[in-house]
Length: 250
Image 1 (cartoon, helix red, strand yellow):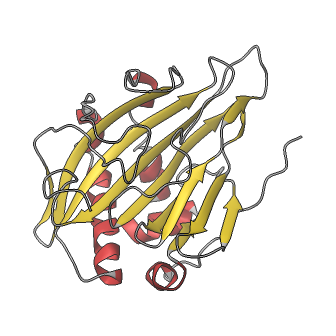
Image 2 (cartoon, rainbow, N blue to C red; image 1 turned 120 degrees about the horizontal axis):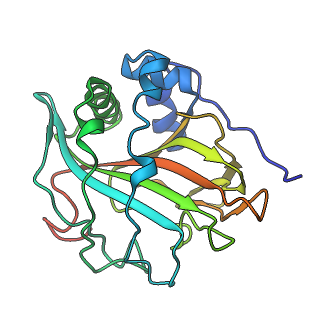
């Protein structure tokens, strides 16, 4: 049996303080629901489209383990609006494996982004970011990921421990099915401190100040080699000023 470490849950209502002190916060599903003003059942209704994700054709390690969609939004005092569809871009400074190239993915499904819970979730994270750092509007990239074990192993972060080149990152666990592994690791970008734990509850979330910490998720393997499993996540990145690639890498 694989050994797992429980998440260091951040007490509800103290998310901004934790981000300021530690550079990260870990929210249980109930705390996320409270932050976003969504009933727990409303969070479950956001699990739309993960069974219909196209393969990620940009993996430079030759893997077939990742499926993905991507859309962009702007979150500010005037609300949440979808931005014109664009390619995802990161500099090589932040992604040595896949940086420096424009990766165009299919957009998130309309059935997801038109839900009122979706708007509330993006707005709540934006308001939290603004409480931690007086900035905005926030340029948000939303990624739906499915990492599977069809080939025996799946790599949530093939680039290794990294920063994303933004201001804040939210990694929401949507679900785990028939897998072991997928441990979350967060490290102080300027020191030796590190933390490791496994997100298992649907709609638990890791929030990070991307300027202060680096992160990774360990590979996943199937519990039963005859029955491949998968790990679904929603990753939201918040960046002030512009989307990456629009104002130069930083």
